[in-house]
Picture (spheres, rainbow, N blue to C red):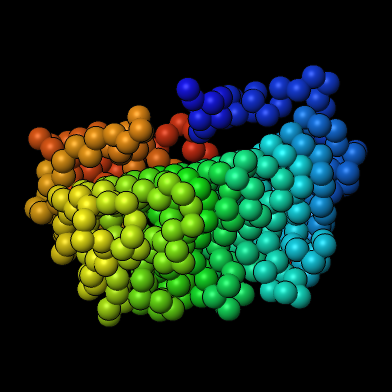
Length: 405
């Protein structure tokens, strides 16, 4: 039976009703002329179930805090509100340290998280259950860092991660600890500093319809699931740039299959290597037979996978893309990937056939089969450019220097 969050994920009204539907909840407004000058002052006064609206016109440099209050919604209004740690931290951990449960963070920009241990996180999640919607994390030592809580679910949608990491290989754009479930959808993670674009030790991983691209950064793995886990990796564009610090693009179980249910479903992804050599996908040889189907693997590289498993309908060569130098990996009319795929079926009632495809930036559209069979890769021929009505236009970018003026 599906939970409310599974049924509502991606639907603003439903999510807000889910997390704000607490008797007596208040809306606390932050910004110039409001009762609360900064988000942390509103958070300190907040009660369970409150919504905190943060006006984008405010200056919140150095506003860092920790809290234990549960069921809070923190949302940027009148644009994307910017939270710049500006050299400050709380508890030696980062900008926001959330020990409360069931937190929603929406339409906010986080930058400048740094601590003496060099793993300062914009959001350090210590409580159970976090939902992040339409946010932007950049130039932090860690974007999101979570603790280990098998009862916790982390959901990140339509969010960008850029240039996070301390350049030590131990800090990443996203680092999810051993939680119960991690979902990353319709998001864009790129240009990490030595660390991974996405790293998760979750018991279950839903990595769906994202753009994970190294580009001109020095990221190590683009996707790292070091302890296995039940993992659905479907419909993603995954690219390794020429400056990568590690030749492996996607790794599964390289630190041991600690998680008890370690099944991998790697379906309809486009994996591109712009380095001179590489490993597209490295899977622990002791994993349950994986399903690796309908993918495009383009560029120099190899697959390091168990001798058993379902490897079928994959294109392991150039697939003829519309504009690869500019990261447009939609298929051309003559691409060998057209009609190359096959129906991947279901797993435990979860459909493995891609229902959506990523639209840049941080958006999505329904995926509809254009030919006799589904195309290989993350994009169906003849589609692209559509936008779901749920995706708001991205807020204008500002640099740290702009904020100081």
